[in-house]
Image (cartoon, rainbow, N blue to C red; front, side, top):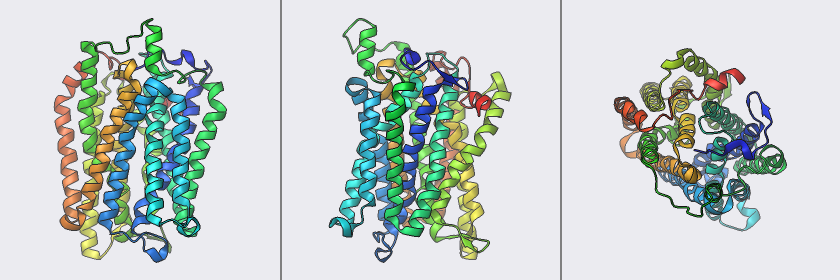
Length: 465
C-alpha cells in the first residue's frame, strides 16, 4: 500500500524489523486485551440472572446484541480510516480512539447502584463508546504497520504475523484475567480490568511513539501524497492495475464474511454451549466458561511457529493468499464437525466433553492463521496509497457484516437447534473453500505481481520468533 513508509520512522531495527513494529505490537496487545476481555464476558453477563449481577436476558436476545455490537465495531473503521486519511492522521486517530474506548470500558464497569442509572443504559452507553473509539483505532494501527516498510519489502508479511502475535497474547491474557476477576469479584470487576488494559495501550503509545515512530502517521496520507506529487489533486483516476487489485480485496472480502460469520460463534453460541452443555470439571475443578476464549490465542501462539516452518520448507511452492484463504475456510468447516460431535455426545450423555470444544477451537485457529494476518498484509500491499486506511476500514467492514450475521445465525439455535446451526456452518465453510480454490489463479493474476514472491505471513516470523 505505502510507498513512503519507513522514512518517517526511526531507523533503528530490532530482530530484523523496525523498532516501531514492536511499539505497535505492544499498543495492539493491550488494546486487544481490553476488547477480548469485554468480549469474553458480554454474552455471559447479559444472560446471567439479575440476582447474580447480570441482566437476565434470553440467549437469543443476547446473541443478537452480540452480533450487532461486533458488527458495528468492525464497520466504524471505514469511517475512522477516512477521517485519518484526510484530516486527523493515523497517530492522532489512534490516541483519540483509545481514550474513547477506555471511557466505554469504565462505563461498563460502573455498578448501577453507584451511578443511579439503569443497568441497560450503562450497557448501551459503554458499548456505543467502544464502537466509536474502535472505529478510529483499529484501521489506523494496522495501516501504520504496513507504512513501516517500503513497497515490495518482503518483510511486511512477517511483520503482520509478529503484529498478529501481539493481538493474540493480549487475547490469551484477557480471557483468563477478566474471567477470573468476574468469577471472583463480579462482572463489573471484569470490565474494570478491560478498561485498565485500554489505558495501558494509550500510555505506551504516548510515551514511546515520538522516539520509535518519528513523524510516521502524523500527516494524513491523502495530504502526504498530494505534497509528494506536488499536486493538490486528491482524486486522481485509478489505474487498471489499481482497479484489479481492489477487485481482489473485494472478492476475498466476500469469502472473509463466510469465515468470520462461523468463527465468531466462538464468542457467542459456543460460549453459551461451553457454559450450559459442557462438562467443565477437571480434576475436581470447574473450568470457568470464559477460559475457553483463551484457547484461540493459545493455539495461535503454539501453531504459528509450526506453520512458519511449513511455509519456509515449501519455498517457491508456498500457496498464494487466495489458496491460504481457501485452506482457512476448510479448516473452519472441520472445526464445526467437532461441534457436531459435541451435540451428539450431549444428546446421548447429557453433557459434552470439553475435548470437542478444544478440537473446534484448534481447527478454527488453524483457519484463522491461514486467513486473518494474510488478509491484513494483502490489503496494505494491494491498496492505492491515497486510500490505505480507507481500504483497511473497508476490509473491516466485511468483518462487520460477518459479525452481524454471526449473531443472527447464533440466535437461530432456539428454533433450528445446535445440530442444524453447527452443521450448516460446517458445510458452508468447506464448500466456500473449494469454490475459492477454483478461482484462486484468476485472483493472483489480478494482483499484477504483488505476490511474485510468496513470502508467507510466517516466513519472517520463523527467524525471529
